[in-house]
Amino acid sequence: MHQAYSGNAKAMTILSSVIKVDYEGCLTTYWQEHQADLLAETSLESLIESHFARLRQLYPEAYRLLCRMGCYRYQDIVNVPIEGLFCLLWDVPETEHRRVIRFLKELFLIEEHDNGYHLHPTIQAKATELLHQRREWETANRQAARFWTESITTIETIDDALMALEAYHHHIQLQDWEAAAAVILKQRNGQWVQEEALGVSFYRLGLLQPMIAAITRIIQQIHPGTSLGNLHRILGDLYWLRGSVHRAIYSHEQAREIAITFEIEALELVSLFNIGLCKIDLWELDEAFQLFSTVNQRAAGTEHHVYAVGAWFCLALLHSYRGNREIAEKLIQQVSQEFSVLSTNSWSRCYSLLFLGSATKNLGEVENAQRLYELAQFFAERSQYVQVKARALIGLAELARQRLDFQSAITNLLAARELLTRLEARGDLAEVHYQLGLTYDKLDDLAASQVNFEAAVEIFQEMNAPKQVERVKKLLAAIASH
Image 1 (cartoon, rainbow, N blue to C red):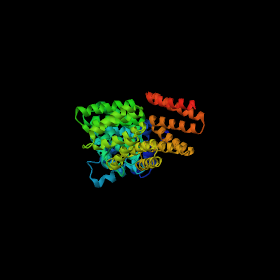
Image 2: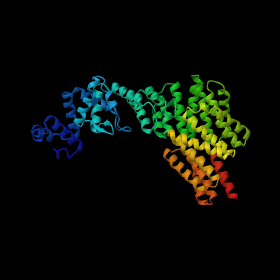
Image 3: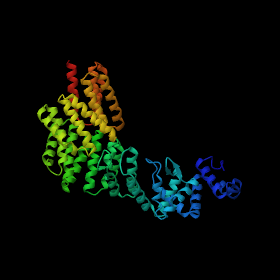
Image 4: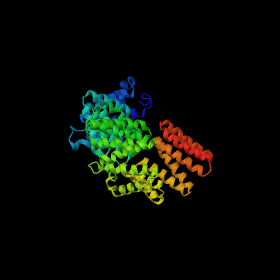
């Protein structure tokens, strides 16, 4: 038998289980009864097919579960928790659930690992084929989607996020685009976040590209309305974090158009706010100022006041760039007084601290800036906000350079570079190179300084951010003139 199946491990495991269960471990008896069949057809596929047929007669409930397990992907989440099998036994008494699973495990038709279960790829392919034939494909996928959605109550880790997204993949298999969108938009609470959509959880955890792929796959299939507008908003956030700023602006403009059409004022305000953030990254500061001023005027004192408070920390940064100390300090004070309205949202809490840190740094308030960047880093680490941690390290590096602690500055910048490279966050990566260029210049390491400035220019050119390119080149000219 070993020779007939070329020593295939899965085939030998299945054969041994049958011999043990049906023939009391007597290999000779099994061989005498089945040698003709074994020598005639010895592919793993044919062996598995015969055991599916045998299982159907021997234990119909186990057969149905095995077929239904074909709805799972076993990719990002390789092992399905036992509760994910229970939900597929909707027509079996609960008292029998573990017995059914144990029977399949003893036959080695399902595999247990890390407190979960999965199927061998060949068994999975057959199970999926039979599930379609049994016309239970939709029911099984909807049951599985419900299981993932209900079992993941908070998103604290990457595994939590990936498990929650499994529900999206089940709806994709049914081409139920609206249900797939609902998975991305479903809000959850956690220790550090409240009412955070799954799409936002993904970018908080640094999973930018997987969520971009998930949204772009369905966005053209979604009917106009609130869901579509929020998908565009999250997609715009993802593009902004990646440094694809013009794509981000397009997505936020799409969200704003939907908001205007369907009179969704909150979405319109957040779209204007997000476009303002993009303008800052392009160094188009006057346009950013106008956008944040508009948000402030429309939101202050209304039910959407939180967006006004958000506009204040952005305007504080812009005024600090302009040297308007008195106005910037007033805005910083206003944000501090109403920080509680920002603290329930992971993005607002973390980015407000980053922007206020930058504003106070620009105003020369070094100790306050250090405290704010360290707070941003603290909240980023607690809430697993990878990109915020990187940006906090950039800010701390700037302060270290100002106090001539160049080794700390370089250490922080290299740590930020490592995080941002992994995220493929080009815009923030360009800023790292810019800051490294400044730091190496202070150390009179002209070669390293030049390499980093050139890297920053290259990224800004790829981003189509001419004013950022101009900013770096002006600095290079100033350095060259000294």
